[in-house]
Image 1 (cartoon, rainbow, N blue to C red):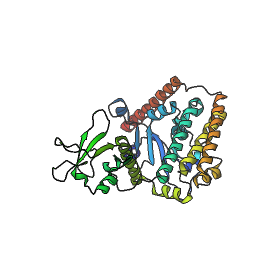
Image 2 (image 1 turned 180 degrees about the vertical axis):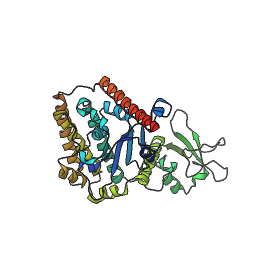
Image 3 (image 1 turned 60 degrees about the vertical axis):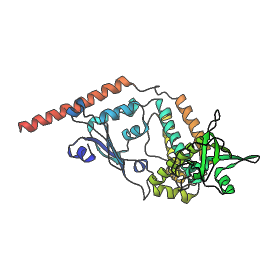
Image 4 (image 1 turned 30 degrees about the vertical axis):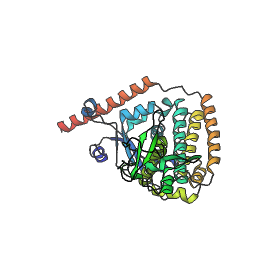
Length: 362
């Protein structure tokens, strides 16, 4: 099922503008994100075709099926609570039945955890980008040889340097395992015998072993830093996947302010923490942010990263205190939400059946 299917079949029961434009944090370059709720036809809901969510390819238009929407509300999911409390000027369409879903009946102290975790995930994302910017990974991939070392004189040196000192080619080397010594090998060299080499090719992910004739002199011991190589491969893959998929505009903005962290993610940290504090103190969700200027200053990179982390720690302490003193229930009333979900779905289906009957009679 696609977004067009939802529209053409009249399944959408709520649609709104979300994201920065709903928060009041949009700038001239901001995209328009659309979110909403749909209800599956009765035959799909009761059959084998339940679909919890429908989105477009870029994921900037997302609709949740009524059951999934209510389930996420029962978990006090931040995105869904924001959706439920969308400002009136951002609502495109809302079915009257949905007015029965009131956030004051759903909010609980779970928000301290859900909003807090969400905020921490944004800090983690910001840290991850900082690490990638400060520590870029070279495009040319290192081989296993770069993670091999040999004993030399009174210490150890990289294998590649050892080969260079001796004027050897790695393809003429042979390795044998050394018993009881993890990832340590005996290193042999011969230009005539035909050893297998240390690796079979540049893309090899392990060293290879050779059959060594009896009496052949062992030249040295070789250590393969297998764990180091495995970590490097993971970081290489993650870095270049990120390069391929990164939001270029966002990345250029991060580079331009020179602070080496994802300022947009850090802006959302403070937005989420402020919203959580308001929920704890006021028992309501304020989607449109009153401190637009401050949040956009964070987005522009006005503050140093460490300064923001200290400010976020203080906000988190304020949030925890707000929920500690809050009169909100510890958890939402699941029985009430379940009953409400049933009643709303039943109403929609009965209306649909009535409309169908009227069309047939006409």
